[in-house]
Amino acid sequence: MLSRLKIADEVEKLLKLKAELGDKNAAPSKLLLKTPKGTRDYSPEQMALRLGVLDKIVTVFKKHGAETIDTPVFELKEVLTGKYGEDSKLIYDLKDQGGEILALRYDLTVPFARYLAMGKISSIKRYHIAKVYRRDNPSTAKGRYREFYQCDFDIAGQYDPMISDVECIRIISETLQLLDVGPYTIKLNHRLLLDGIFAACGVPSDKFRAVCSSIDKLDKSPWPEVRKEIVEEKGLNESDADKIGMYVSRSGGVELISELREDTELMKYESAVKGLESMELLFKYSNILQVTDKITFDLSLARGLDYYTGVIFEALLTSDDIGVGSVAGGGRYDNLVGMFDSKKKSVPCVGLSLGVERIFNVLEAKLNRDGVKIRTTEVEVFVATAQKNLHEERMKILAILWDAEVKAEQSYKRNVKLLAQLQYCEESGIPLVVIIGEGELARGEVTLRDVASRAEVSVSRAHLVEEIKKRLQK
Image 1: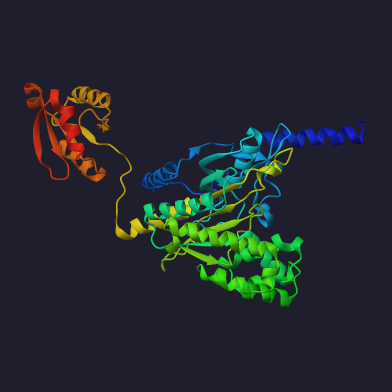
Image 2: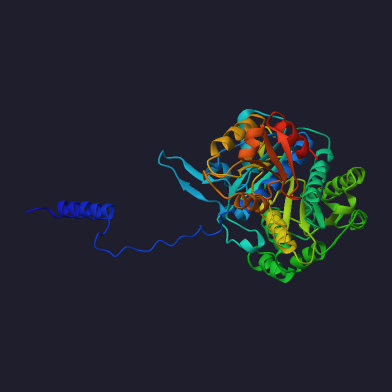
């Protein structure tokens, strides 16, 4: 008689075998075709717009002297944990067959800090455009996804105060103007000033970051809701919460610095004094770089991530018909690299991140509203035939054009009506058509047609490339 242990072992093997083979008698289930929650596919039209946006962003980054890097899409989980405050719960965990505990990257800043620490790099100005992942409750209508691109620009190195910080603000302004997303404002604040405000309001130092995470929600939730969270979840008493509310309701320009300096209770705290000194210098440099009209000193701006240590900023679109929230943000994080260095050697850093998905949604809606059609290819010339059995002559012309770096294409059918070829060019926005017929072949010429005007001219094959390039440069 088999022992109970052996019977159990045999049953387990059979169950595993059944799982591997599947239940052949079960009715086939219908596959539901959809993208995973919080993700999306992009059509050729959307990708054309998207690549155009990224190209403009890279143009601005390069103008300011940045070089680019890349890092793995996943990191050791311990590299990411403890850097994002309450948002750490949004990190995507991965299981690795080799035994490493991994997670998809949450942003591009922490991997950058790890990269600096590993390479013992003390100064670099870099940009990085790549996908990041957050296990969030997505709102695709507002450009909030679980998988999305970030476009980061960071300056690492020991430099004089606020010179690199203000350049990041200028870069955000330049980019949003180049992308033509409409009116915007860039909110500014300082983490040291916030710490001073919390101290003046009676918040224990070990709760600064937790309260900061709550204040960070003011762009999405009204003060009564945030106040309730501070009292009920963060454990502050109601009077201290009300004091915080009086501060975070204030915003303005450089004059707000003078007003806060008159607050004798606040000025007792060194962090508040230093924060205001930094903000004063930032406003001075903003004036020199001509971005003062784009910035607002806003005490409600908190940026909930734990690694910020100095100035923080966030750009928002201000048009009435746009509700996508923040489209860029960033700040100074001087201690993050030191968290990865065995000797705790810190590398001061400041950087920005552009929310390209939200920007993309805004521009897509704008083009749809204006009825603008986006070209999905860059083809400059279409090679067409007017009679049958001339497809090999088309191919000869194409070889010449491709050798001359002209972007060109043809129909993949041997015989196709000329009208259908011309209609394709008009629908696709191709500017020029080379037409080959038996008469042109006999004369050693082609007909060159301007698609927009429909004007045609005969051109010798020997001068075809020259004529095409001349017309494309107009």
